[in-house]
Image (cartoon, rainbow, N blue to C red; front, side):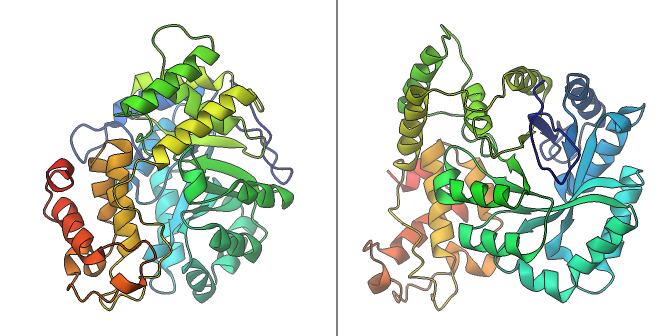
Length: 391
């Protein structure tokens, strides 16, 4: 296992691969297979993984219970653990303590090594200030209940910079992969964090599996060229190349992978044995750029997310809906974007469009937004197949 530089603030060298407990093996649609989860997580630990990440809401709370079982039999001493405060569940004074002590009880630990404010975004600073969250976690840190303070993030660079500047964070976790680097955070985000000596953890390196499943033929052809550049003849796994692309950045401490079965764990552990900085050649990086471009060109709706339509009288999340629709074409996968659509508030979904056409003259791309929203509603709300609606 390769161990990487993280932060001078933190006396810890993380394994290049961290284990995310968001996609654990299941017995059925809702029940985590605890026995299998323990088996695969301990295999990872036995092979050098030293960071396990969970959250209050993963698997409806079962993820924390699974982690508790994983940590038994001396495994607690072999790893650092991370958990998260669900900011959207803070409704009144006392919720911080209520949730935190529930987490400690479920994990059966006296201390959480790395504690994150979960999924910060443009409105999160209001919540942080309202509930005096900074004072709260400083107190918990001084009491020895929390080791290091960080946050996870799913928004744009300007918002990210505001949050970074709000507090002297120890570390942060952000979504960063071959495709999302253009859409969410630029490399400048990494540079800015490192200037402040904030350790950087990457999540969603495979975009929840979208970049490794149902790969379009023209993109698989490009991956074949990458495989040849690696000296691989015959069967290959693009996951190796996608992870190497992230590990190539010296600014990144390590990445978290949500692994669901033993095969994924074995493969990722093997890939992590060569997780070095500046591994990729100029020629290989050009191929990665071609693959990124090929993915980004696979769109149905030419929405640039300028949000000129944001003043929709019905408050419909137009650009977010179009983005989810484009993901279906981009990754040849309908289930993941459909799942993501469910996170859009019901009163802001495509089926709430009244065809008022206020948005139409505002769109620089001249999109027929009401008609496109009707089609999106057919896919997401009526659950029709993408290819039936967009032929």
